[in-house]
Figure 1 (tube, rainbow over the protein chains, first blue to last red):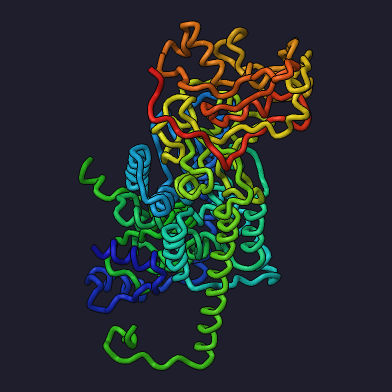
Figure 2 (cartoon, each protein chain N blue to C red; figure 1 turned 60 degrees about the horizontal axis):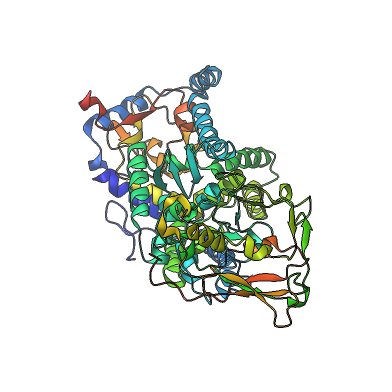
Length: 325
Length: 285
């Protein structure tokens, strides 16, 4: 239950809680004490990190993810251009080999605006719900959403500029995302128009890829410029309602990243690469309550932390799979 | 929220003035961000709901001639209607079109809907019912209503024939000519005409074509339900016996083929989208 409530807190943008001393298991308290006794030297830490940086598989999950993202979007594009009817439509709604799929957030906007749901949409929404429930909810963001890939590029530029002190990451309150989520839901309900879709970079990009570019891409450019020069990953972090919708699905998903506090060196590399670093607060020394902690549902399961962790303390887990096998 | 407590139950020490100023600045710029995004998204709302730029929509679009509200609410902007259309009549609106980013429309003069799919593929493809599944046949569509906007320019009114390519050799639009290929539409530019009196708007009207097929005992797809109950357009000889006048009748569905095929520039006949014929209560048969 605490996984669920902690995930909801993260999605609402509330500050992560520090555990009270009595909340930590004795084994965890002992593990932290052990680490204090055997303090790692800076030299040793650097060595381990450098070892990871040289490892052949240091981009394993990133490469798999980029390949998946490109493949999924390419399927839409090629299927239309060669008229093979494998995947019809765009990311907002589609038919895959004739079977209806509908993006959960786009479908929600339509339901609120239209106040009427046809059977095809019920089928499409349920299919996609089950799919992303199995796959981790916000997995959609990092493994499918085309804007995510562009934003990763913008982020790399932003970080390079920040290192040269040419730009500084302007931060906002993460709670604004849920406020925007409610506002867009309310606007759809009151105006009877899917207001958010006008500025949805996911929809705009997906359509531009499939049906050809348009002026709406200027909005995408504006967002990317904002993320390069003003605020790191601003759209995904502070604005996107699609991420919130899939985040809610993720609260009950069995696919998670799991943290092992025993092997962790607490050097914090994972939080530096993370799109949503607040989900990794448990990796700060003293924050873990149990030996293994599942990372909350705001996590996009992108695997960057798994790739960079020098001690393999973060890994993908399917909850309950070990019991089944 | 009540005063936050630390885990041990003590009151949190008051925030330093510096910290408080930081929090205030964060709140202000976050509010600014939210306001900006909402305002940005609303710019798409006003022109779309205002209907000032209204366009011809695909068959079955749930709208009445004066308002597209329902259609705009229901469209999920996926473009599946675009993908299934055999003549590629459907386009998706862009940012400045002012009819809802990503919603489908038809530019009849460029490429009209000629119903060459027979089965209303776009309606079948629509996942949200924005193109209503309540219609099954072309004759049930009510997209708009044709109007002879420039009778003085109309070749039939001027008692003139027409020879050659209706829209010139460079025209990209397609139509299905059943006598040439039952299944595949061909470019209008590959199909020259030689008509003693121009009757292109009547000759190519998808409704009139179906009526003729049914009269010959060969309804489209062998389905008598495909037979339109009423005529859409007819050439009525003028009283002076010189030429004829295209007269639009209550079976017109507003598909726009007449506007597309009309050989005079600009078209002498156009589809109005703020008018439709009385919808049918039932199908012929």
